[in-house]
Amino acid sequence: MRNILQKNVAIPTTANYVQQGTGAPVILIHGLAASLHDWDDLIPGLAASGYACYALDLLGHGDSPKPDERAYQMDWILEHFFNWAASFHLSEPAVLIGHSLGGYVALEYARRLAHLTRGLILINPFYSPSQLPLLLRKTYRHTSLSNLAIHQVPERLFRFLVDVSSMAMGHSVGALHSLPERIRAQTALDYKRTAPGVYHIPNVISDMTPHLHEINVPALVVWGERDRTLAPASFARVVEALPRARGEVLRAGHVPHQSHAAVFNQLVLRFLGEIEK
Image 1: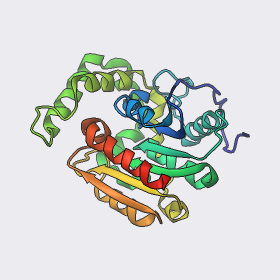
Image 2: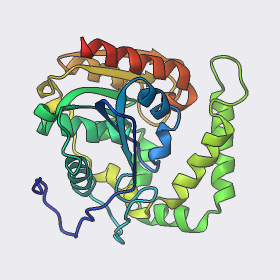
Image 3: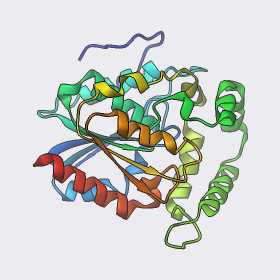
Image 4: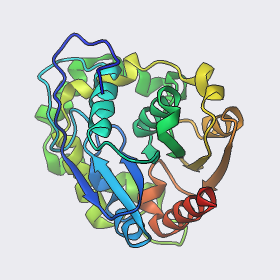
């Protein structure tokens, strides 16, 4: 597949990824400052149900290449992902599952390559800068703050902040934390190993709103009604704008696929079964 996006740096052609299972292809795309471990609770069930799962670390994340650039561009993330996905030469269209920033990537893929897209599952999708609270928008504009956070703040302090946030959110079934301990540990690790330039992406992301009506594939939008990263009201607007979408709301925060994994996994399997009919 030829490069379809403009760039001003050399985009690596490799990516860290996992592949598990055989059958209809499902591509999983994590969010900002996360990794392919977002899907540790989902991939085994999908593979056991007859799906071929492909999950990567996006450019600048996890164990994928991290160009030494102060300000990453969204086009770099997209080109890296498009070329990685094309490298598998899949024999049939794939279902894309994307969380937050991964939702943006999935939407762009479906918009540009509809013939290669069987369906979309979007989790708290990030599709417009207007979804961000004003404070977060201002923070992302200061690249120096991101560099300071990544290089100077100890990992254990990140972990403490993750724990506090998890306790503040609580769980719908009365547990102390919204996130299991292993996920909180992975979250802190993923933040620390994300390239600082990645935090520039919210500054340069294009508003997808005018293009949502063009994406005419079956879609399931799942979101947490208590999201504090992106405005919860914005997710219902995605459902309204996508021609073939329906929504599912959970009493959760920004990562319902991790905080409510069992419920989320059932929603995914049910949707996949529906579009196979």
